[in-house]
Image 1: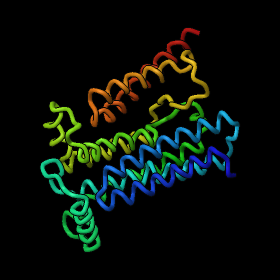
Image 2 (image 1 turned 90 degrees about the vertical axis):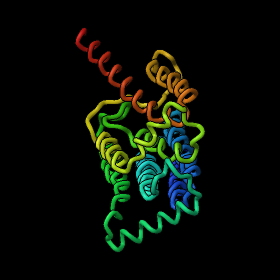
Image 3 (image 1 turned 180 degrees about the horizontal axis):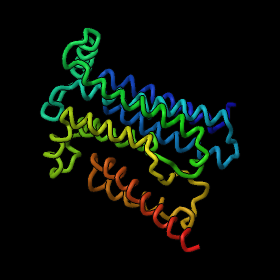
Amino acid sequence: MFNLANFFTSFNLLSGVSAILFALVGRLDLAVFAIVFGAFCDFLDGFIARKMNTQGELGKQLDSLADMVTFGVAPGVIMFVILCIPNPIEITYTSSEIAAFVQESVNKVIRLEKGGLLPLMGFVIPFFALFRLANFNIDTRQTSSFIGLPTPAATLFFLVFPLILSFPDYSPEFLKTFSEIVFSPFIICFVIVIVSLMMVSSLPLFSLKFKDFSWSNYTMRYVFLLISLIFIVFLRTWSIAIIVFLYLFLSLIENSIIKKKKNEI
């Protein structure tokens, strides 16, 4: 029960809980770092379990429960908080001011006031993440690859929003005008719905699970990681969203190659 892999899974869970608390008090920057650390622990727990041959049903269930918090509830809360903030791109707010906006929005929800329900769109994310993770647990086709956008990838996409708000100086100058459009509440809600639906789609995607580090077995994964690093250097805060699109694009290429090889046999 208390093996090294499950130890890292527990840190994944604690990272998700921390991200929720940070977001609610207006520290979106710390919420981002907490989720990134959780994603790192999520990668390590699976890798260690495979290397040490400690995979089991308990670890599988623990991993899903931790993922539901870190990659389901936490990004939902973050997007809820962002939708509570008026004109987030035009005005820089302190953490106390953001927390006050959250409290005001919660009061509006309780009173069912007009316009107070829009931030609740953030919780569309954990709704679909719940079904994504449950389906993953029972779908035998997803042992070495994914069907539908994984919850960690969807969460990393949503982290673009708090990253841009927390570190405005790290956004490329040519994308700053585009940021004003993206941060429209209705655009945010549209993105939430589309990405959430992708989590429960039937789109086949490659996994970043490594049993070893050989180039021949994981060529597409290494290409993905290399290009992602280049995007991070040049696009900075916007890079994560582009990396998710790259992930989808390379998965389509890999699936096309696999189908072509099968047809040749």
